[in-house]
Length: 172
Image (cartoon, rainbow, N blue to C red; front, side):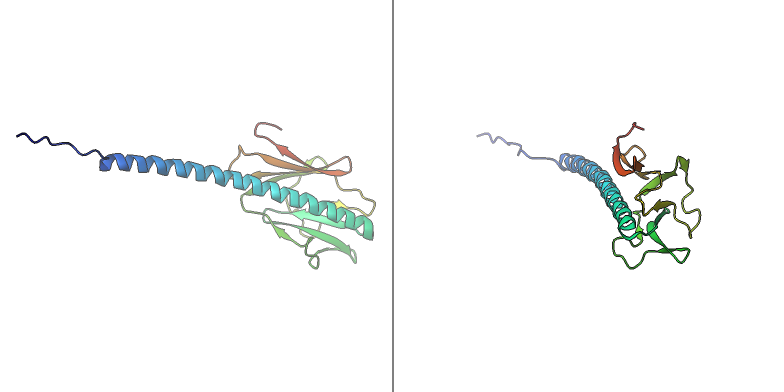
């Protein structure tokens, strides 16, 4: 009688390792993609919050007859009020107090058509919200400093109204 030896079906260790490597690469690509989308979403949320606070500051200036200023540098932005012929940082208002800027967000800032070296003078605001409702003409672009091709956002004073625009890669 002859015995037939059947080879058992299954995967070799090499085949399993190849599958695990492929899965690992795919998972890392998905994770990287989600991370970029999260930064874009967070940059958008940051821009929305900033323009809302600017509108609030403008309304506050009109309603209370105050001069309110705004200032930005690479780490934070802050609102200021004019008191006793000096600009004082707003600290007692939970909405208009100084707020940090996430480390990956970079910006380009123009006031009245001229590029502004951020924080020229710590005692002077870069933008003014006047009691008359006027706002200094400006353009502030926020973008992901880690991904130059990412979507970025433009805040600007357009026709006495603050506007937020989404700029796709390649647009200007």
